[in-house]
Image (cartoon, rainbow, N blue to C red; front, side, top):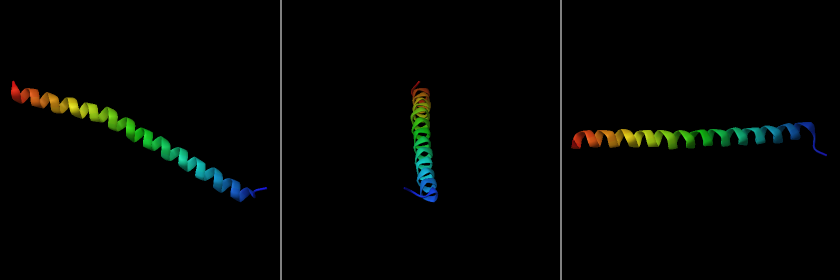
Length: 51
């Protein structure tokens, strides 16, 4: 049997891991959407220079 302290420590590690995963997902989503926005801005400026 684990002690209560061990269980709490284990639980907080799991929560920390889940939070980290969520943050990574948020960053990945921001990069994918922000990256595409950035790309369209660059394309717009390039086409503006060319025309």
